[in-house]
Each structure stands twice: as C-alpha cells, then as structure tokens.
Image (cartoon, rainbow, N blue to C red; front, side):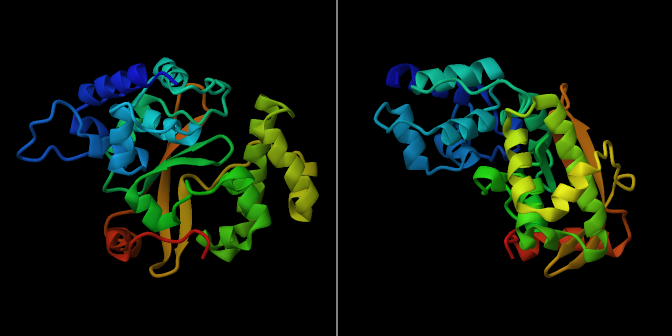
Amino acid sequence: MDRAQLADFLRTRREALQPEDVGLPRGARRRTQGLRREEVAALGGMSPDYYARIEQQRGPMPSEPMLAALARGLHLTLDERDHLFRMAGHNTPSRRPSTDHVSPGVMRVLDRLQDTPAQIVNSLAETLVQTPLAVALLGDETDFTGLDRSLVYRWFTHPYARRIYPEADHARHSRILTSELRTAYSRQGADSRAGRIVDALLERSEEFTELWSAHEIGVRREGDRKRISHPELGVLDLQCQSLYDADQSQALLVFTATPGTDSHEKLHLLAAVGARDPRR
C-alpha cells in the first residue's frame, strides 16, 4: 500500500469533480475546490472520518469493495480504477464483462436522475448503484453478498424476492430471468460467475432446472411495462426504460409512469414512504 500516492491520487480526483458532476447541489457558500471529503465519503458509502484518514495517509488498507465504491463515486475510468487498486495494495479487478465497474458516462446519467427511481444492473441481474427513489421502490439491492447479489439467484431461492412483483407475473419473470442468465452464461462460459450461479440453482431449484432445460433464449418482456408491488403503495404500473453500455454488460434502468395515472401519483409518494426492505 503506497499511502502517499493513494492519498494524492484521491485528492486530485476529488478536486477535479464538481458537485453537479455527481448529482449533488453546489450550495451558496462553497469554497472547496471540487468535492468536499465528506461528499466523497457519502458517495462511497463510508464515514467521513474513514475517508479523511485515507487522504491524510493514516488510514487502514481499504477493502476491495470500498475501493470499488470509491471508483464509482469518483467516476474513475477503468485505468484509473486499476491504478487506485494498485496504490491501495490490491490486485486489479478482472475486466471481464461481469465487472462491477460502472463507466463514468453511465454514472453521470444516473447522477442526474436523483428525483427518479433508477439503477444500474449488470448482466447477472446484480444491482450496482441505485438512486434513493429506487431504494424506496425496490429496496436496497446493493446490500446483498455472494450469490444473493444476483436477483436471478434470489428469485429461485428466497421467497421474499418475488414480493416486488404481483403473483400473476411470477411465471413470466421466471422465464425472463432464466433466459437472461443463459445469455450471460453463453457469453462468459461455465468458469465464471454466471456459471457458479447456474450450478447453484441447478442444485437448489426444481423450477429453475425445468426452465433451464427448455433452453429459451431472448424471452422478452411486454414492451417496457413492469408492474411493481409496493407494501405501502400497492401495485404501480410503470415503464422501465433501459440504456445499455457499449458492450451490453450493464444497463441503466429508469422507472417512470404515465402522467395523470394513479401510478404517477404513487411515484411522487416514494420519497415520503422511505426506503423499502427488500427482504420483507
């Protein structure tokens, strides 16, 4: 771990960003060049003191998940992310399509959607970043670990995962999720995260095993329509627009509703009801 270089690198990248670059308000009395330390800490999901100690060359070695969060928060390119990991004493992450690194361009779009439910997911249905309203709508899907990070895995192994959709839609979602996992599996191979999810589901879920054996590819959703079941607001009939990155490995999902409908009114209530627990 090169404390001096790590601290200097983080400081320069922090000072190169403006609040509006990451979806934060500028405020009337800003004197700091670039972002404040506490703002970077909030973007990375860590305490201000923890981040400050890293910049002051007196903090502990950051973990790989912490570095990945910093890379997203600071909108680092892949080369910059790899440099960050090396300065912190870690091996650089894989650059295979299943990477958790979000491109700066997609992050900039998400940062401007803070008043809208939106999130970035990868090809394994793992949620990487969410806006606060997406957490209110769907729950914090970034907090899972291991195989549970994938919605496909949770869908077939944990009953709570299905509560976000009306029961009448479950069968089709099962087919869609299996089809999308097969696409990721064919691209990444058996010796990949996709392969590990498939192997685990074949052992644990008879429903998945039956759907997997059908070899369905490209099962489509009903246009961009998606019905979400919320414990306090009921069913919301939404449109889910998808913006894919260059290699189709990640997608920015944006949830909207037709103005004048009940669902549109319910979306405006999300901020008031607060974060949803995805396990309930």
